[in-house]
Image 1 (spheres, rainbow, N blue to C red):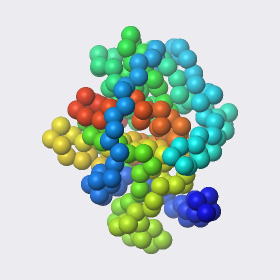
Image 2 (image 1 turned 30 degrees about the horizontal axis):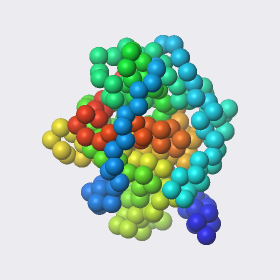
Image 3 (image 1 turned 30 degrees about the vertical axis):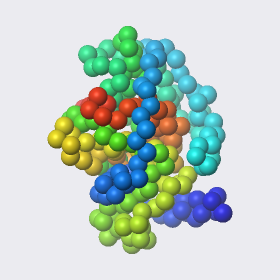
Image 4 (image 1 turned 180 degrees about the vertical axis):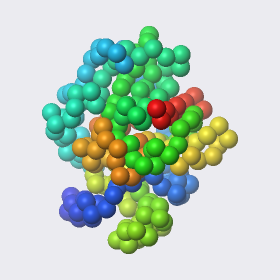
Length: 234
């Protein structure tokens, strides 16, 4: 039944522009799983130290089965890898370069874990510093009212949301960014079932990652002021 429901949702999503940003973050926050995970340290812009091309097989997680990604169809530069990356930021900092379609998770000793990303139009609308205030596994999706006005078929999800599934536009994980005043930036780092959108300027959404990658990043991030995020637009 779960697979059949997921396929039905996937058929719906193919008729609309997927978005990962929502104006109802507070409602989701009430049910978010906030158990922090210790940030991992491992060796990572100019020279690749290690590439994880074998990390995109099928994944069973919380009762959901993510399909394998045909990683040979993804440009190697957008596959998860540890790279040399000179930065004055502390390990654990996330730097999003929307122009180059990369997300860097800073590691010790001048390295970073680099992930390929897709950037939706909302992702190009904001730049600056924030922090991961909270994160959620298998989040519900609430499309903005503006989207529902354009796509009546998703209007039913504005209030009640689309439940977790392998076709949910937020993917397997979502991380919610707030500013230093505790205000929601409405900027999200999230998964996506549309792996082919990685490395592109997507039609909508914030910062998309392949589901296998967003799960990896999620496990490294400890929500709070120390989970600094810098978004660069150039």
